[in-house]
Amino acid sequence: MSCCSSEDKKPAAPFPEGTTASEAVKRTLAWMVGNAIKGVVVHPGGAIEFGGDPIPVTGYELDKDNPKLLRPLWPECDARMLGAQQTATKINLRVICQHKDAKHFGLLVQPKDCQGCPLRKQ
Image (cartoon, rainbow, N blue to C red):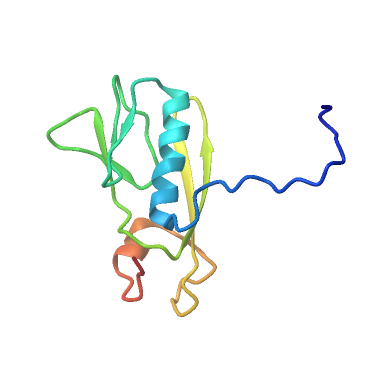
């Protein structure tokens, strides 16, 4: 079969139906970081543990007790859209608020914006 077949095929869904936005973010980061540096684990709460020196990720901070662990500053919310860019030295997250009643709706947000949002969805 050639790469340009005219067969009518449905594209594969990126995540199983019912996957929350937070879970999608975690899976995306796991894939990106795992491909950039081997030996990386993304924990269920969203923390990223590196086998070696961690690379910076927007909206994450180093754990005080474990210098190989980054903890998310983003609170759980399923009303966000994520864009991510990976370079050799960092991962930049661009996050857009998708809660239609929030004052930041449609805007790029930082963790502090989401932390103070009374409309945050989980």
